[in-house]
Amino acid sequence: MKLLSLFFGIFASLIIAGGAYSQSDGGWTYVTENDNYKVYLNKDSVKKVTGEKTMYDVWLKMECKTDCNDGYKSIKESVQNWNLYCETNEYNVPKTIDKYTDGEENVYSNETLSTVIPNSPGEAVLNYFCKSENSDPMTK
Image (cartoon, rainbow, N blue to C red):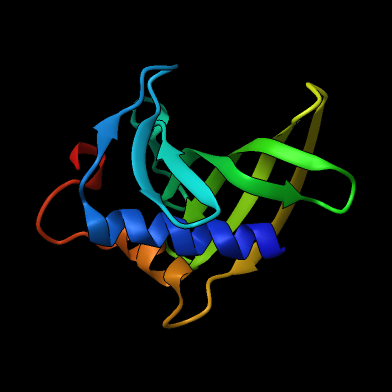
């Protein structure tokens, strides 16, 4: 849960910062960093799904600049698939791939929907994708 909160905070920073540049591997676009992490968004994988609920499907990657430990061992990077549900103000993280410094990977999912907390960084992310009034967020 702490990693999810961190991602919401960092992902919200990408919205505010707006200064992105491409990273050379796999189409990841640099969005922001802090003392511990660099965060990337795969803009090519962003999907808008309309139907009963409008949903955005996005992929994020966090590279550890310092020792990131999940209680098991040190993580090199974490790649996460996020679903943002516009009408209900909810999100989930259906897939996470943690890549450890020793080369091992741990893949897991969490389909549990969580409500975005008002006035949180998560709300800024949801608003960016779901409530953009000036343009289609897919083109940002």
